Length: 132
Image (cartoon, rainbow, N blue to C red; front, side):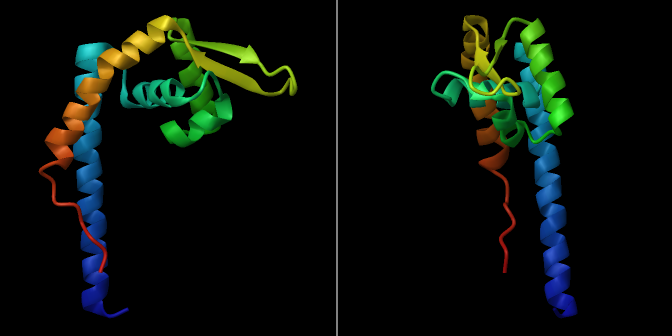
């Protein structure tokens, strides 16, 4: 890889990280201010809202991009707030299912327009770096 190509690649990386920081920061502020949840909580609620009825705890890892232990703590906080319920898997006692409560579904539905608004406001006008 030549110096120019490498420089472009590094520049794209920096632009991507700056965009991520902008979007994440704005999401975190607006979701907290308006709905009392953070980005990770929203992402977990959204994954659960789009599951058929319940998801394995492990399925939430892909949605929230946290470690297994951090995701477990997140689910515990959501459960304490009455937004989700946990239940043991009947076929595999090591497995845990997580599902939304009615309060969790309401919170998600209330927060979803804010989430989409931030995405439109930040990503709609952003210059997303392209490879090449």
